Image (cartoon, rainbow, N blue to C red; front, side, top):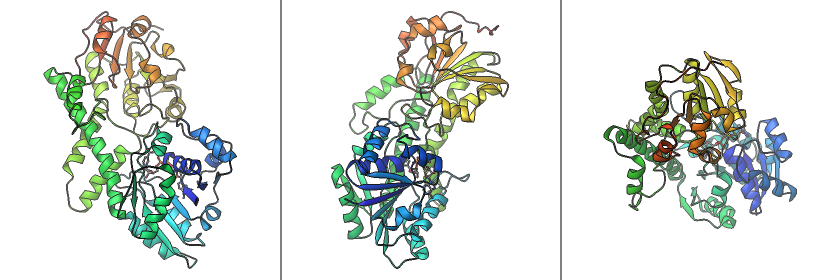
Length: 453
Ligand code: NAD
């Protein structure tokens, strides 16, 4: 078993650290954020991920994991240091590598014995080579440090499960020593390991993420065409899914991808290609489709209503997907400002995302409208004029169509996640619009009334 340090306690670093401890390694997680470290020491996870806190508490109690802001003490005697800090998007689409370089510098100035530095963050091809050189340039002690790539493929919302049951572990190394070390670290997980060069490993991460983004944008593009030609995207996806060359995952149409990875990784690969004088046309198209898709639902509703001014608008779901409290690049961040600008009175519900959202959009009067956060869905729907479904949380999927009809002033629904059957909504008397499917027949009130209270 190894003495492992992990730089960064975000989705990637914390989950990796906890899972390394779970299989028996000795782990120290490092972060520059003192509040996070204090929370972690108390057994509280700063992020919402199923099963994470239980594993944190179990391994902390067993003495296999600790948390610190003191990078020097964590790195100096480590056998392996994993880097899991952020690589956010910059204005030109390129990845910001300043957090990586800070950690590389801290490592170079701390290590006192031979160690392996493993870059888990998603980084442009060639970054591992630069990190290797950078560490050598700044090394204080006369020790050997080798850099390896080990990109992460977990999905937020199922991060712990994905790490313990990963479909593959990609390791990118330049020596037999580094390769063996990474294989030994991952052997207790009993997962398929694919060993390649550092550059190929870096590329596998971008190529995989961008392929998934492309698949989503492709289905959204087809969904938009389905609406125009009278086909149904769900039937189309089902028909496609039986072809094993296509597969049955990532075929759902919706209001576009969000999160911290697909948006930035598509732009980063497009940037990398441009730097090489190459135009990555497919990825560019995926980005374009996604940008338009995020406001599709708002535009659809705008065609139906005169204005949102003075209307009570229920928003169901704020996070970019269920199972996480992460709001990064969430469609809600695009749609809600548009509604507020028009003077909507928003009643927003999300089982875990409201705290983070209210830090960006404070409760009360905002723009020309207002925003309130409600802890039960009924309060959001009660007397609402229109409802937008933005995240497919189970709590939202469980609402029966009759409830919309019973509670809302006008049962008018715009569903960005296609969670209902159109016929069921029609039978319940709900006017229902979704993505890539025919709307329900207009029923009930044709004219939207303004709230009087
Ligand atoms: P995050 O923003 O959630 O966490 C990054 C953490 O690093 C923060 O807690 C920050 O305080 C800390 N940090 C910054 N500088 C530091 C330093 N010098 N020393 C120690 N800690 C420091 O990021 P994330 O979502 O975990 O993503 C990390 C990387 O992994 C990114 O490159 C991302 O693209 C990639 N990735 C993310 C996911 C995902 O689902 N979030 C999946 C696969 C890969």
